[in-house]
Length: 67
Picture (cartoon, rainbow, N blue to C red):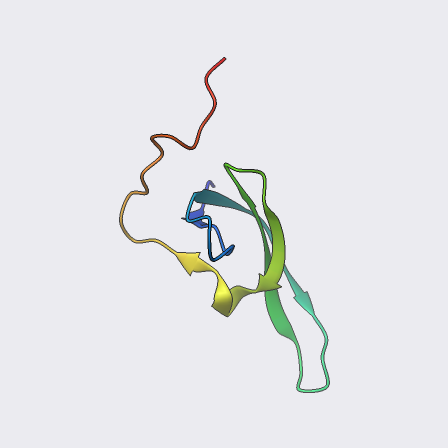
């Protein structure tokens, strides 16, 4: 299932796809993480609570390349 979010890069704001979710162990217990890949090719792996999931449709004009 396709899950969209906003790119975590503060100066980007492009639509991003959450490509993976996984759990990593920490000293405070397991923490869920997510991997995002945005339309401007930024890739992040960060805690899931820092992924900016969007309930509204994201704007894609100006971010995607056309062949």
